[in-house]
Amino acid sequence: MSVLSLRLKHFLVRLLSVFTGPRIVYGWRHPDGRLCPHTRVSTHSCLEGLSGLRLGDHVFIGHFNRLDGSNGLEIEEGVQVTSHVAILSHSSHRAVRVMGRRYIHDPNPAGYVRRATRIGAYSFIGPHSVIAPGTQIGKGVIVQGYSFVSGEVPDFAIVGPQAHGKPAVVLGDTRELDRDVLRRHPELHDVYARWAGLDNLRRALGGDVPDGAVAKERP
Image (tube, rainbow, N blue to C red; front, top):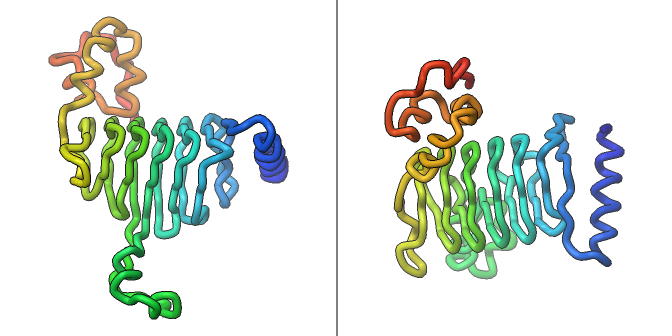
């Protein structure tokens, strides 16, 4: 599908959604022409700073989210962003407070934050969460709903709110969550290892990988 036809498709679906409500559109093309055919994006999510936004394939962006690519935002393969989520690469609230009416006229306001943000492969972002500028979320992570996430989150962590208004904390490990399914479905071992790595498959299984379960570890 060409760039023009994909843009026309998005425009028509967005126009149709005025009458039908929010829709999910398959296919995402980056400004450089790279196509992610399996990525799905809602007509009712706000995507800003497209030149700095990088979406992997098989990404899902649900309804009523805000993705801010103004200072760099990478969302890797297979990430799911549910609804009412803000993923930011800039923050101005402190600058607005300290500069007052001077803020609007200053090209480099004091207290303004510009930091690139990344969400690792096959992570899940629950509804009503805020991912602060500069946050680095690892792969296979679950962010529970109503979380405020800042800083670094390790691979396979389960993070959630400890109290209203406080940053989310690590509550568990998704490899343990996946263990039962992976033990019951050995045919999925190779697929899991392709993005998670063989060592993490072993961790998820709680021991060694059976012979022949993984054909070849891939990046």
